[in-house]
Each structure stands twice: as structure tokens, then as C-alpha cells.
Image (cartoon, rainbow, N blue to C red):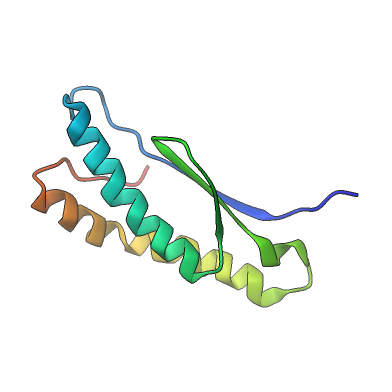
Length: 103
């Protein structure tokens, strides 16, 4: 028997010239992913894996394909993460780190 879930995969792409120091890279990822993890958990997502420059989570309630609220939560999660870019960039700017853009 197969189980199906909605998943989220977020990857940070920094051009090599934007951040040279490994400490700065770690700090940038930490700020970004800590913010996203807090948002994911508020929508009942489970964090599967932090890949260093990527984050994978899934939404357990979406295994019930008739649970419309669960799927609305996934959409709201995506919109909330997108809207949080301003918050993330403010934190990055405070640390004098390059800001993120959505591609």
C-alpha cells in the first residue's frame, strides 16, 4: 500500500561570489531555515531533512485526499513562506549578509 503526501522542498541558491566565508553561509542558512521551520510547524508540517542548503518537509494530514483543510494549509504555508522573505531579508541585512530573492 502506498501513502501519498504533499511535500515542500526549499533550496537556497547563492552564486559563489556572494558569500565567501563558510561562517557567513552557515549564518545565512540558519536564519533562513529557522524562520521556515517555524512557519512549517505552524501548519503541522513535519521536517524530514535539513540538507545543509535545502529543507524538506511534508504535511501528514494530506495523506487523506478528502481533507480540504489540509490542502488549504499547504497552500497557506507556501504563501506564508513567500511573504516571510521580507522578514528573512531583514534578519540577513542586520547580519550584513546578502539578501535572498525568489526564483
